[in-house]
Image (cartoon, rainbow, N blue to C red; front, side, top):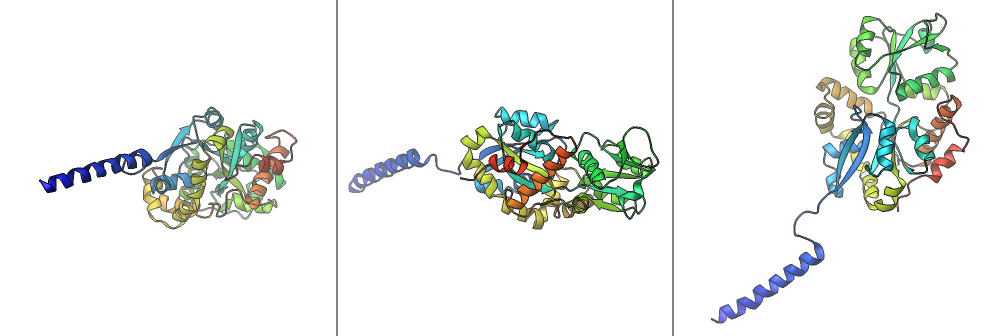
Length: 335
């Protein structure tokens, strides 16, 4: 009986302690990860550290669960962001001015550089070799806009209407048919995104001129930006801790993107659907285009501002604000 009398208060004490712990700390077990919804273009795959963090479960170590939400166009992404349906968004730099001018968006920074290239059917020494020839590009894309800017900046005349012997002729080439058109010789070159660049090099034996090469030729300031990350003013004010964690995990995700071989199968094969040989080549290609520094460092900001100045100069955006100041004044601050 003595043992029973001793056991009862011990059991009661343990129960009280457990109840206090649950009240103060929550239910025993792993904490629920916070979902982070990130808007992206449908069909765009393997182009952001968010995806690497997701497939390698790096996000889980930061108490986050990355969910990529595809949209049919960038305007719809920005609409979803401003409505509060998204926490962050991946957008081409061509839409950055529009986003910031709304007064509802904050820029987090630069993620990926311009990873496009021009691939020719036959070896060429310079873009001048494409005068009197056809270059295919999918017209409603950043690749198309940037191609026109680079040609104009380098002094090349181009035609988009009738074929002209003394100009570079730009023709619309949708992603589904551009490689076959290149193979058949219906076009002489194509401006392509990274995944199609690696496949094109397996089809034709021509030359590759990267957009980074073209950026350098025109004297671009800072790095040539393509993919930038933004959030809404509302989210910046309400989920700052979550955004800070998603920024914090980037260095680990970028290191994995560059060095973890699992990225090839878990992202480029399983998620993006590339054949393994192309997945490995594209992974190696992308390693050259991941911005290695802080997304919001001064160099990255200069690159984004310079790209927006080119867009303004060639009539793709309006306004008269000083663009570097526009970026700095609308920059998300980790706090």
